Image 1 (cartoon, rainbow over the protein chains, first blue to last red):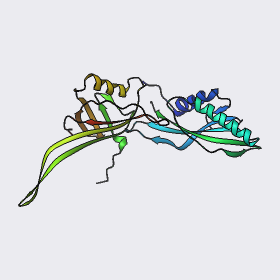
Image 2 (image 1 turned 180 degrees about the vertical axis):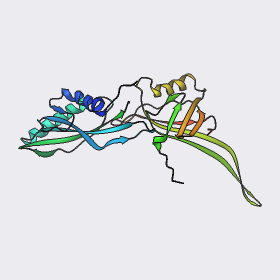
Image 3 (image 1 turned 30 degrees about the horizontal axis):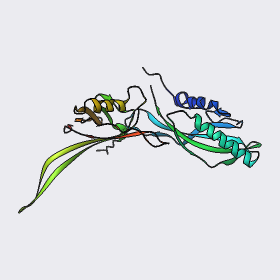
Length: 129
Length: 130
């Protein structure tokens, strides 16, 4: 009998593990507090797509990886963000469809500002048991 | 009678005994009839001279997975190109089509960001039975 699977254990956690080598804090879900630089895996839109025939649970799972760096000065922050994005793109495991990287935006988080870009990635997941 | 709706989620099929549910994104069986039309003195008359079935499958490539379906199709087309493969195609529960198709080679490759996909258009060598 196949081992029961879950999106957390079989998709999000392995993705976070694959990203662990980048020089940033990696979160496999939205954290309460972000310590930059950071890579945050959040659900994309749509999150789960039924793309295969038949009634078994097989889904295309869309994620957004938010790359965040401290926004202290514009040129330095953009350079840091670009480097972080390149590291993340290099670390994404095989079997993932890598989409576009969004235009950087400034997000105020508590007392600090972050420069954030979103990377769209997706993969396929099959439920076992 | 309530409206009956069946969707792609109702489809299952096997080719040469292999189940394709986990990889297939679309499967369509089409039967084309060749109909001759005759203009007679009493009006038009129609006569069907031939039928030809086509089984189209769209699927995600699985070249690297164990027991690869792509590899099975490739091996069948390579080793026994004239040995038909049995297909059991269920459009919905209770509607099961049985037929055979000629082996064909799956395509390989794809574009950079997307999942590799395979498009197959099998020629039916027997008329599907329902």
